[in-house]
Image (cartoon, rainbow, N blue to C red; front, side, top):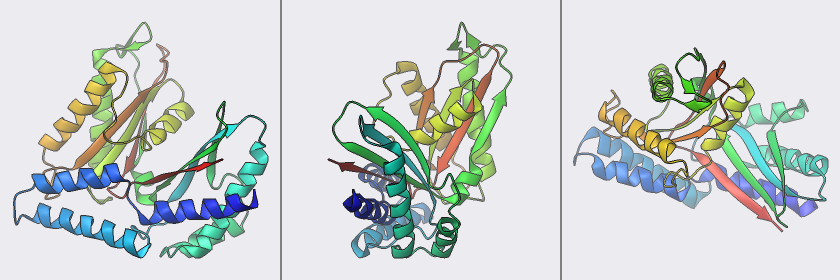
Length: 280
């Protein structure tokens, strides 16, 4: 298991210095959608160059170290405590080896040995391999995310989200984006969830940022909502000099109690840093 620490460090390096292929492809498509010689095309071309340079030089694509969140599928028989300790040790090692501008912040947090950092979510599964997903979400993005407590009347019908419920979710996304206008680097990716418990809503929306932008939600109504809401936001042409301000919206729904309706909106800027390590 000692070599797993090195694997965690390499995962951090990969995630910090690269944007996933689906996000890079979406940025390229957004660039092509801009008018030639326009400020928007120039800005997105600069992002594309920055992504390629960071990957080649193995340098952070964003100077913000981000907040590390892990989702780990663990085979039966392995110790969650032991794996958790290895992930913490790997995080401490990575904080010293990755050239973040804020590396001193990471190192001081790790040196304090405070519980709950990094954030680790475990799930036992039947597979033989350890599957480790890592998200480095920027602190500005974390600050821009919002949890909404919505009046439940008329939002659900027998535990199923009613049309008015989807309208409210879209309003929550729009309100969050309006508050983030001057905080973040556009274009953005949004993870959103609806649930009846605060902690469930927050966890689900953050998890959506791990989905590929070109995937298809198996719930037809939710898939339509994702596509239609993104199209509506992009058609609104926000004041960032870009025709495409939204690269993706991904949503998850939990069972809804008729008396409790929470919506959480998680945000990532264009530098959506996520990756996976499979350890056999």
